Amino acid sequence: MARRTRPKLSCPPDFSGEHHNGHAFLNSCSLYICLALEQFHNEQEKILWALMFFKGSRAAKWSKNMFCQKADTGVFPIQTWGDFEQQFQVYFFPVNVEADAINALEEASYHQGGRIVNDYLDNFQALVSDADYMDPQTLVVKFQQGLRLGIQNQIATMLYRQPADTDPNAWYRAAWRIDQACLANEAFQLSSLCRALPLPHCLRLSPPDPHLCP
Image (cartoon, rainbow, N blue to C red; front, side, top):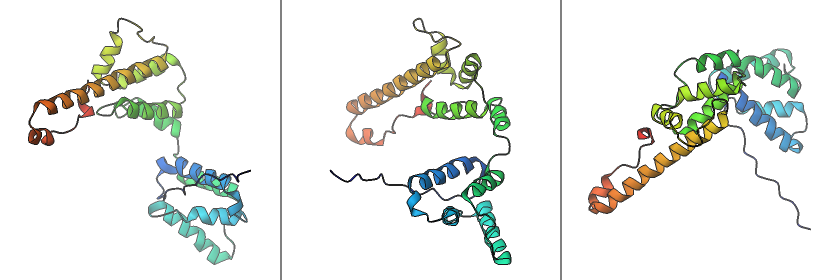
């Protein structure tokens, strides 16, 4: 029987202390430790390993303070990984994730703008999750408000299979299909134009700009 090989693990990215990156960094550390537990002989090794990725700004200062305390007392101030997680959350997690997300959804900064629908949807779903929005009609209203006007109008005027105002997933799918069709059409038009033009002119053309999608 062939010996099972383990998937290659990626180390966490360097962390400089930004609140909006705190969740992702700590999750990355915890996942690595969970999958490679045999690499750590004790709790202190887990903590020191994580501190290796504290680079620059607030994170570097926090790490330096830990070692200064150890130099003064002879004892490292954090003894267990659980304690490390708790203190990390205090210093590096957003103070009020839910309030920040709700405020963002009341402003225009979350709107799609020049992004493709996939990127807009990823950001939108993260915000509504943090804001704890669960009412389907509220999700549709917020998603619709943030869509580019051209896509929003096409969905609102669909003759067949128009998504219901209480079905956010149907709105997500409809917006994605329209966006993909727009991008495919732009690529086709560019290809047709290239075939019609002499080669030097074609080489000077820029690729389709997703910002031009309605």
